[in-house]
Image (cartoon, rainbow, N blue to C red; front, side):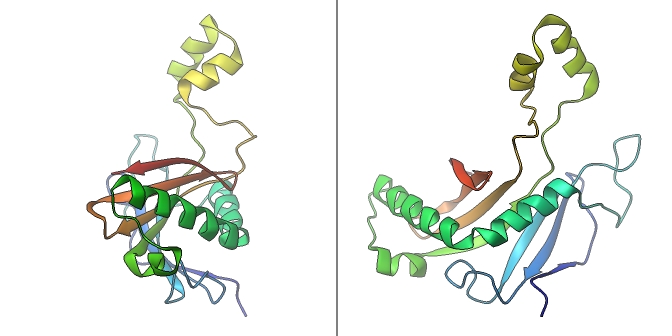
Length: 179
């Protein structure tokens, strides 16, 4: 039995997002009751001019690490999401009980992106003026300490105008956004 299968029909859109499907018998049924998840994979351009070749894209090792960590930590992630969603509902003055939560939300997608790296010329200009650590922080660059990053997008009935996007870095919830 395969742990998971990735299915893609098209290549990246103009923003570099590839929409596909993650299918697995081991997906957490609270998060993905049908055993499949929409997967949004952000990829980097593969042409020197910064454009994407039609229908072509590459999945890098950071994508794989992020997907593997998500698969390994699903139970922990569902517990963290449950707590975060209950708090979010309270902020919207729509308190919910834990036993009814998963009937009021739907996980829309699992989003994977490449490791953040700033374009070289701008980063090099920063490096001439400050330490590597400070330049990396200002540039938003992620070092080797970032082993994974994924976002789980959730639609909740108490806020139907926005998606709740829960960002996980190294398996830990780092930020929750309404977009």
